[in-house]
Image 1: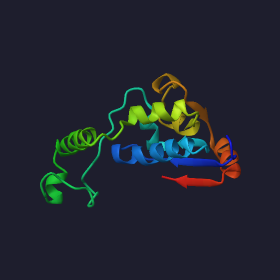
Image 2: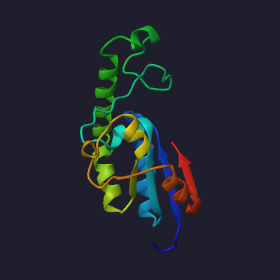
Image 3: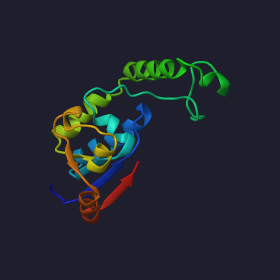
Length: 156
């Protein structure tokens, strides 16, 4: 990298709305010549899986704009999460927002280092074959080394 700046992001959430911030920040930083490491842990691993069905939940998310206003009791009914996820994906596509898949590909093309937390992989009994190609598997010590060398570290 031209100026030697480094950034590390810990991504611990695995919902549709939480998949975007680490990927957008990583791709942006990489395009600005940062050496970027994305460290996915716990539910964030869902973003890295080959078979992913990322959803968004209106329940407990009061800032989420709804198609129609609805009380919390309605938000917890079966099918509401699926409807909200469908609506958000549709809106994102209509507004030209890049998909999670395309952001992951862009990050990989820009040499963003993507690490899945090995302890969490073991905890949830996942296998390496469950994840997209190009993902590294490492523990907290590798994160600590990268974070110790970073100019900027974010936890998302």
